[in-house]
Length: 315
Image (tube, rainbow, N blue to C red):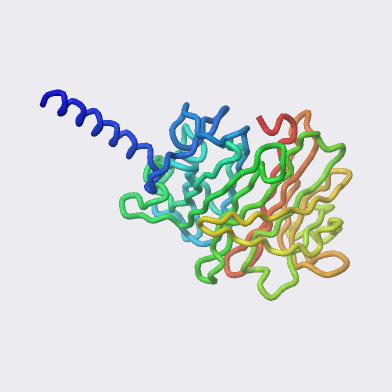
C-alpha cells in the first residue's frame, strides 16, 4: 500500500510539473537559445529548434491601451513571447510610436506565441507573461499571434512585429514584416520602408517615403525614395496563421537631414505629411535605416525610424 501511495505521489508531482510547463493546450512551451534564453523554460531545448531567429516589436497603434492612468493617447503596451517578457530580465513597456531597443532572440524553426497586453505600469511590466496568452487578473490580451521564424539566414528569420491599426476601424492587428538578415553587410547606405498604416491607407494608393534636405516638419524640400512612392499596406496575421509582409529597399547617398512619409503617388514624389531627423549612424556599421509608416490619431500619419544593426546579426 505504501509503495502504491509513493508511486501516486510521484505521478502527481510529475503532473504538476507538466502543468507548470504547459501553454494551456497540453504542449510544452517553446524555448529560445542564447543569448537571451527567451521563451518558455530557460535552459531547456525543444525538439525542432535550429539556430537563432531575431525579433523586434513596434507599437504603431494610436489607440489608448494603457491601464495605469497615462495620458489619453499614451498607448503603452506589454509584450510577451511565449511565457516570458520581451526582454527576459525586464518587461518591455512600449508606448505609441516606440519600439523595443534591442533585437530579441528566439529559437528558429519552431513556433512561438506573441501576446500583447495593456500595461499595468512600468514597475509591473511583464507580470502578465506567465499566464499568456490567457487573461491576467481579468485583463485580456489586445492581440495574440503564433509566429514561425525561419532558420537563419533564410528570409523570415529576422522579423519585426507591429501592433498597427485601430480597434474603432477594425484594422487593429499584429502585422509581421520579414527583414534582411545581413549575412553580408550592405556595401552602401540604404533605407528599408514598410507601410503599417492601414487606417491612413484606406481609400489611397499607398504610402510614399522620401528624404528631406531640411529638418522642418513636414519638410518642404524633399526627394522621394526610388521604389518607395506607393507602398501598399501590410496584412495582419491571424491568431494561428502568420502572414509575412515584405519590404522595399532603396539605396541613398549621402545621409540626408531627415526622412518623411506621406500620401503615395503612382509616379513622382509623395506629398510629405510627417518628417523626422535622420537617426545617427551606428559606429563601425553601414548606415541602414528602417522606416515604418504608422497611423496617427484621428486618421493622420506618423513615422518610426531607427538604424538597423547589420554586423553579427545584431548580437
